[in-house]
Image (cartoon, rainbow, N blue to C red; front, side, top):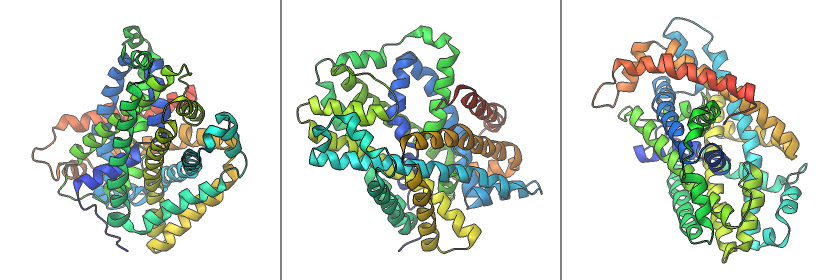
Length: 436
């Protein structure tokens, strides 16, 4: 097995990073948010925040990881050491806990996707009422076989290391995700009534730009869609070659993640309107509404398979990143081998997750993790990168691989705009019960 500690190419790194960023939020939340908060008007603040968070947030996390050549615990320690201060390791453990917490819940949801994918092959999802079928797998230990399968697949990928595992998987799954969703988008475009969905998505309601909630939701959606957590993108950054332009790959990752969100919207919302369904957000959209649509659509079983294969690919690539950062931490902090660390993290994720398979428990768990712990980890990461890490060291790192040096204002915007916005995301998420 190859445990090479660097991605072999920029493409491999970008696809792995996009795989981490593209997840359920792109599929079941972004389309709903676009329509709910002004259609095309919502995209204006969303694009602004994606550009800001991508250039400053992702670049910062990639750069810190590459500078420290490690995950969050050692990266934060290194940042503090540039100021001759201690305490970095403790702070670095907080976003690590967030990544593990997300992975525990996320593995359950990807297990649901795997079950629905199998049901699409067999036709079982069309034989039962979708809400009843969904209820069967969301009770206590309702999907443990699929849950175990998802963890096993992810662990196997990680056991093959960076080059043969993560990079190779990403080079297959992410292009496949885009191709399959593009096929679905073309098919949906020919459904009678689909035009109402395009109107819902694209006709701008400019008055929404005057509402603060539109900007708040766009900011939260952009922030969390890019997987800025203070941990996962740091570990991927540690595997990035010094020859690469950190800012360029961060912007490319942001662009592809946005394309994935838009593509998902052009599949889901027009299909929902074509069949007179409710464009609700969250799991019901994907596990109840979409199966109803496929059941009523010519060749619906084929398109159901394509849909759930695509979602499964997005879920696995995201889960790989979450468990990779934990595996790397177990290697460095517990002095375990790659194999033992991977198996330990996989067993821990599964062991806790098995007792959270009931939907109410999972919902409570994910709320706590996504509203409090993950945003807190992201804020700590932002502060460490732009306020704690020696600015000259950070500038040198981000300029490595670039043809033209970054202007000084780039770092000032990071310090005085990006960091305060990250704090605002945390505070508003707590106040509003989640914004991403």
